[in-house]
Image (cartoon, rainbow, N blue to C red; front, top):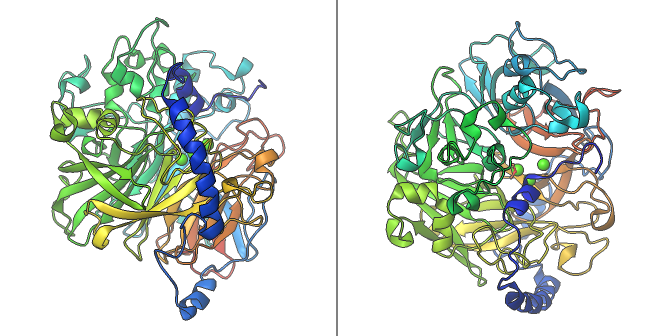
Amino acid sequence: MDKYDEISFDDFDEQINPKPEENDFDKILEVAITRRGLLKSVMAVGSVATLGSIAALSPEEAVAAADRFAFKHIDANTLDDITVPDGYTAKVVTRWGDPLWSDGVDFDHATRGDGASQEKAFGDNIDGMEVFAHGDKTIMVVNNEYTNRKIIWGNREEGKFANDDDVLKGKMAQGLTVVEIAEDENGEWGIVKDSPYNRRVTPDTPMELTGPAAGHDLVKTSADPAGTTPLGTFNNCGNGRTPWGTYLACEENFNGYFSAADEEHKVSPELKRYGLSAKDWGYGWATIDDRFDVAMNPNEPNRFGYVVEVDPRNPDAAPKKRTALGRFKHENAEVVVNRDGRIVVYMGDDERGEFLYRYVSNGVFAPGAETDSLLDDGKLYVAKFHDTGAGEWLELNPETTGMASMADVCIHARIAASTVGATTMDRPEWVAANPRAPEVYCALTNNKNRGIKPNAGGDLTPASGPNPREENHYGQVVRWQPNGGDHTNNGFAWNLFVMAGNPKIHSDAYAGSANVTEANMFNSPDGLKFDSNGILWIQTDGNYSNAEQFEGHGNNQMLAGDPNTGELRRFLVGPNECEVTGMTWSPDKRTMFVGIQHPGERGNSHWPEGGDAVPRSAVIAIRRDDNGLMG
Ligand code: FEO
Ligand code: CA
Ligand code: CA
Ligand code: CA
């Protein structure tokens, strides 16, 4: 292990729930191997029934579609820089550690800051983001998903915390950053220090728990005996945006922050399903705050794993944890207003073999009317995909799951979903709904356990349906159309928009679907978002070795996809060892904002400042040189 090797969230989870010695996998492997032969033949004919069945194009439409991308393809590369097509320019807006107030201190490359400076500065590892127009102000909200311990504590031996303030610095690097941004006379974006909208939401910020789980015994703690006022949010991955102008931050790998002083402490089976154990991921929060000692406070982890609603225009309002949307490792929350006004939220649970969920509000959205109950009062569903290309949403409630109450269903959504026989997925990352058609896409990033190991609940993961490849290192994007174009319909039709792969070294299913070529290949789709023109933007968080089965993929990247033709074109390549994640647009759509997360996570980047600088996660602004629209 070199200095920078850190175990990933996913491998951390593997240690807590290792492959059972005895399992039924040997039986299903046989089925999976037979299926591999089948898959090959499907690929040969029409690339997994991917394209064409959803939207066949007339010749005129095909000509129009060919011009839908306004940019020229760029090649893969391994430069420690941002690469965008000719005619576009990318500039840094703000970085990890930039102070939000004039009494904060500038980022110190020698110490990488301290607890106090970090609490007043932009957080680390940028993920989901949105920009909100508010009068003549522009407010950006960004998730700061986590922090790379060996970077933030790179001033210490072995990159480990050396004292309580180091732990606090790591804690304050997480949560959310809310910051006003503005363009200067040259059209360059920067943050507005001391704006009344600037705010850090941290793992200690007071919040409100709402919906079915609020006040339930499982969320009561000694500090909050009513079970309604949890503190803080962290490991916020992707995001959502409501039509009433609020931001949704999604809590993902919350398990890795809890530990117990007694390393032999055994957690409940319910906590284990969520990856809790006596050992944390290396942040040491329990060493400065008993709240994170799972032996002392076994209900504290039940207060994380939610979608958190934040009002960017009201810096004093407590964020609300919306428990009706279920508790799991939330990636993002894609909000759709159904044609009857009901709010539909699509959500992935990003862990190997976990599930895809849908929430449907009971009430309807009307501009100006009350919206507070729309994310508290509704129904929760989980997806089941059939090999036929059909699928269904299975409702999770006390009757279908045998659980005692809706609070139990929401708090233990994973267990509820296993009970009804949901389809185990290849790590559902972002979900994106097409604004031009009733169809929804989800990035299934990869799953090395497909066909090999059950999920943490013991559900088998045979290669089938939208997860057709064993030991899936490349990932795919599945899409579905709700029956009748109605997002509240429990039936849908699905197919694969793309299977990532490497046609340079494989000629079977691992080459990828027909729309993957040596010019546009990639692995591990993660961030997904549609622009207002109906172009699907895909961001990757994959293997950047550029070697062996990833040869030719280069650094992590961003591509544009045409839902009608399936064409994919590379738009951006990120700096070394980064993930490209999170995107949004300025109110005038002339700027696209993109997040660059964990550059140099293995010690090989100095982006964005270059030289000997510490690598820093940053938001970049991309504009056309002719000041044209960006989406
Ligand atoms: Fe935070 Fe699933 O990525
Ligand atoms: Ca992600
Ligand atoms: Ca990812
Ligand atoms: Ca990553």
